[in-house]
Length: 622
Image (cartoon, rainbow, N blue to C red):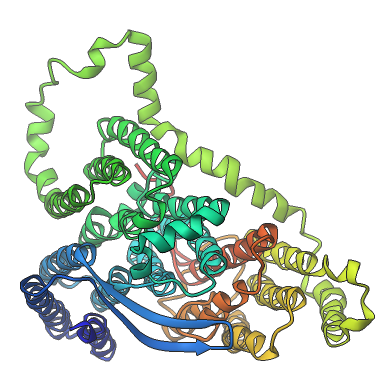
């Protein structure tokens, strides 16, 4: 029966591929393709679930495809099915079918009709991979697909300033969550000395034996899982991104940020629960984050003027309560709560345009405030303080900018001396000399060689930080991103002796996508007046082919699961030792900031209002 699990991914993948080749003007054909794909998937999920329940209901595990194997490392796709997967699969299938049906008429004659359904099917592929995943590597494949499809759906109205800006902001928070998932995967390799599967985590004796002898690594993995779950489920301090994600169409808001994607943080906690179950401090921490999030976001939701923002913060508050349930060990209650919250928020978001339209007169003329509320029992000063804090959303955005993004920007401004000419004069010869030393390592003193991995990884990190903060030349930012990967590969090569084939695997996708992307940027600069990063240019309408190919190049350079670089990234982390946390952090930050810088280049050049637009546009949301 487990051999049928890949069909839940292959079916939406087939529908996605078919929809790519359909003509844009054939709305009926496009919507019917998505409708029948998702409908057939829902029917298959129901039949599979009934057959599984009638049977012995044992968890199903399938090691499907081995993508790479060496003497001490194996990268494979693994699928797992139990009651957690069943709940998420059925709820996801039903709600996606519902939203697909709704979108057929809601987006009628909307520019980008085909693009919307393509992205929804692409999202559905990632969602199914994530919920059926049997190990961290397979989960990360779905995680990456969800991240990029989220960006594309928020930026659906790509001719507007705010949707594109908020899409980049949300993608940046997703990448922060990716830091935790990457470091958790790295640490788990050293804890288990293998590619651990979720089915093995249910073995209490095995988990207890490893955590007893490696308690600190266990706490570190649990903390990284928690960071990822907090970012994905919009818990404090990452709560502010969810209302910003509502800039996309109402159907995408319902399926993504009301019901499915926002609950994947809960899914990650449920899936890894057997691992951190005995770590009492982690359980308290999860409960505390959930409690504070529920209290604060409830207050914020009550003062919102936008119906979508009210629903978003109300959903965050409920997910906070689900975090508490998971921490307390009430797995069945958490699953039931997830299903109820997902159905309710989807319904609320889908009817929100109608509610605003029908009740606008009542809001103006027949509104009567509530006679009594909880806040009335507080002193007046506390009432007013809480009201202002909730109105300002507890300055969550300002806190993120002050303590996370602004330090990177200040660091980037200090790197303005990096130009293309200086890169060619200094860094490329330095890299070639370092590469020569790699083949003659016997000439390097041992006390010097041990510091080379950290030195080279810091050089790569400096380059990608400069690429992230570059405000002028897009080509310079692109070259810096590519060179960062080369420095990272060199750093890991000096860290441990291994076959050069592994570095080639890692850099193969970078080289192909990087060179093609460079020529596309060079070609675009010749065709247009400029491609500086100080504003949005909106060239996607005028140059759609270049925009599409460059997006594929961006995915290739960022290690998206379309090139061997995705396997290579996981592979090089296995060569970072468990006591080299600083080196792992530098490489992880390089990978994460690299992805944000790449998406920023794409958004600035191809999305947003056209550079020659004469019309006014909004630069701030409500």
